[in-house]
Amino acid sequence: MLSFQTALVIVAIILYGYSEYQILSINNGVSISSGVVAASSFSGNPIGDPVSLVISTGVPPIYGPELGVSFDNPVNSMGVMQQFDPGYGRNRVSLEGVELQRYVTVGTRISCEFCCGAKAIIFSNGQAACGCAHSQAMRGLAAYLIKNHGSQFTDDQILRELARWKSLYFPKQMINKFTTQIGSGSFTPDISALILDVDTSKLNIKNAPLPTAIQDLPSMVGGC
Image (cartoon, rainbow, N blue to C red; front, side, top):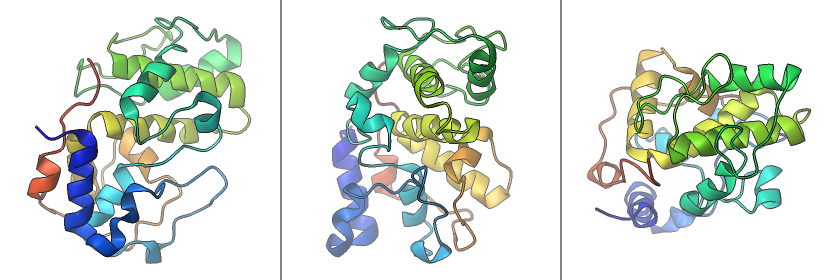
């Protein structure tokens, strides 16, 4: 099995050619203040466009520099974010009132179906629904953003950040899920969050098959 970073290099070279190898060094996600991604930013490539939307690279805005986390190092970043998990973290974030309500709203809209099988990472009472490292990291980030940057991130934007990390934890499954749902027009909350503020009108990926390079991506990054 190829390593996550090696597989991404292969994907980039195959899909875009050496002249566009910078896919691995450009943060493709929409930052909090950057607005909508124009349709012209998509090539119409039925394989390349999903990769550029689902697989994030670089340092996420605001919390990335604060916490020292990077999409380019998902395993180490997972450990950093886990510490804030309200249920399991060593530096647990405590939420009450409106903050807890927001945490429930976000956490019940994203699952860890590819690892522990939980339908959501928390229950409706705010308790953890799964103890795997992926869920701990997503819960930890949600709690951290609500507590420290609640006025800078809407609930949907927090969900988008969780979905971006989930995509790195389960790259093959999330690219499959993304292309399937774009083709059908029916979206789960995590995929809907990935295309928040993104103009997808130029996407042409209905029934796009996965190339061998993407099939070789890990099914799971980090421990379950």
